[in-house]
Image 1: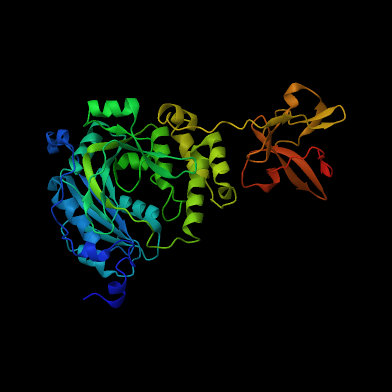
Image 2: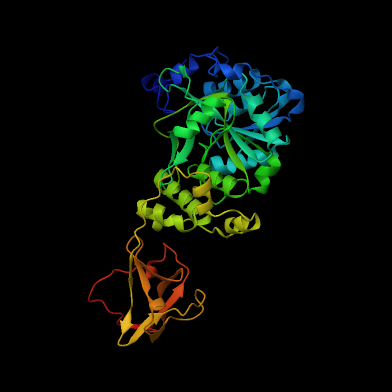
Length: 447
């Protein structure tokens, strides 16, 4: 029996048609959406290591969660699935997880408070005992032969992070629709993930070798496999991020910049219910969480290119994003590449906006000019020196920064005065933002 609310609005609880999902068998027959080349391949599963499948969920519909678990098991060689770990992120109905825990190989871990996808996945990964981790969203449907291509690729390349082609499960009627194999992951300068079609040489190469992995600049993040030791060496997830959003781009940058490979495996297919709205809430609002998470990713991995993101998303300049020192230390420890390398080598197709070069000025007082004298940030105040070319200071209209030698001029309160110093550039520091006026002076600021 459905309750009154369920009858009135079948979309209310999950933002998809739950009545349609509940009406569909958890092990229904679906189209084999693989291309014909893939169906000819055979895999020696005796050479593959097993995987722990990790699924996190929060108030997920019982039918979609069951379908995720059932299809993962039924359409995989049993010897390749070591365990299925469900992490119940403090769902209201605890019985959903408890009931599914009765299935063979299924373990349910329950959070006593809401932790979000990121921390829940890390919890599941820490519990896992198989050498390979496979993360799945809680509303997917695994297709025929989905697992072998993923694990087979990892056996060839232990540092490959591999994802299936993600087919579409219609949120209204739950029809299963095949997705194009000519897609890869990208992003825009708002740090929003996007799918993009392969074009030109990339498309020609894929059609010439239709079963080969597709190198992808980013991943959607919901479904992927990774060797557990590599996941841990890479620093798992950024635990300073909240709930969900932006973690997929952060991991994508990290994988590529730190010596790994991010690939879509065209012979692996998994369907996913794509929704137009989130069925759950975010602390502080979804926009604020997303900006905080993406700001962390930009600060750690994007180097000078973070300025493009901050120009596109001005509100991100003022969001609190927490301490990132451990992630910066991780990058240094792993000797990761620059973001410039990533753009040139992995994603040269991404258009970089024309640089607003700003304008250069001498900040003069009579015959003297303001100069940082090349000192390290925060070491000493700026000084007045006789005019010379290298004394020019750049005014960046996008950020409001006055920079010289990679350092920003900042106002530092000192007793009853304000002092001008050179320091590390920080978009959140209002003392580094300047407004240019032709008649402006630095009255009241000491050197």
